[in-house]
Length: 480
Figure 1 (tube, rainbow, N blue to C red):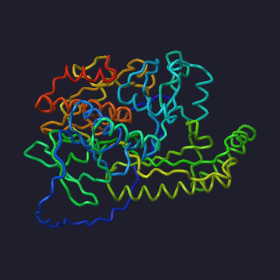
Figure 2: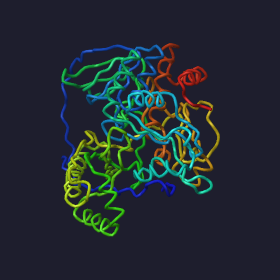
Figure 3: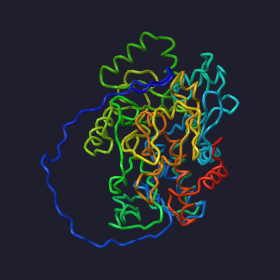
Figure 4: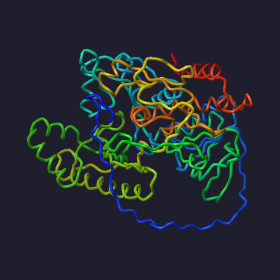
């Protein structure tokens, strides 16, 4: 089991056990053969409009490739918007050095210009300024913002919070400004294969069953939805009770009188503890994070985690969604009734999509493991450097973790890149490095590589890495 530092929440739930209602004995039907209309032929097809997919589509299009981005929902952003996981963490290491830039930084800058992102000023990164540290401790955001340095002092990380509704609009703008085409409300059902080469995808939407052909396909679905149909070797092992073996359900309460709440906590701590335990006993969850966006005073965020080893199982997803939605309303009712400050609150938002943390991953040209975290050595084909902040003493010793381009390339499958949490890594590596900013880095590298492959007339595994590195550096990626 992985080991976390003391500032990092790690009391995760064990997997739920549900009764499956599917047919127990094997039974199949035969589908009629049919012709499917090809609606697009392009250079690069990006499947999934989450953090990795947006980065891939924008990077490919800006690099000159004809690009289309396909997304099953009516908005972009994936977990960062639809999942209400609007915290973009670990952009700097404990020492205050920024390690993730490029496309991720561009998104934050564009949202900040619209008043839709907030983060500590650069002068505070890696510093123990008490007022700043206390701001994030009071917000119950230690997990995302606060770590201990070598002297044992609390210091601040560069972590950003974004407004998911403004982000949906800004991400549309980013994709369309880059010259990529956008196709929403469309579910990609399977890859089009020619031998071991991916040639395109089959989609379903209200227009029917359709096909798109491309020279490179990038799987940014998060769950590696295309992988079973490609024959690519995968693994889905997760340690029960770990971070990636969780569903997340997030909801926001608005119109909370936080001053009244704070006065109650500070003036009657014993009564506060009594009310908190009473709410838990009645099936509620009285713990929350304070919304940090300036225009959202009186908003609190509640993150519920439910253990799962089957995050693509529709029956389990249905069970978890129904259960957690019921619990969210129950929590609000109890807070409104018993907790001072919540009397006039209301549920502002519930995540329209479940948060998923782990699952299917490729076994790629390079398979990242725990030993790749405990090293100072970059790869010859490094396409990103991630801050290792969550492992306490080990993070102080090894603050940087390097990602090779080869971890995005599946073995023995051509024409495909994987730029999401389904990248090539074991459980322990994924436990720390499959978050939103990491996927943006994967996407930026994959989109740029795909465009280079199209331009050079070569396969994605044969892309000239020197040229890829040069392009990523031009785009602001931090590789040194």
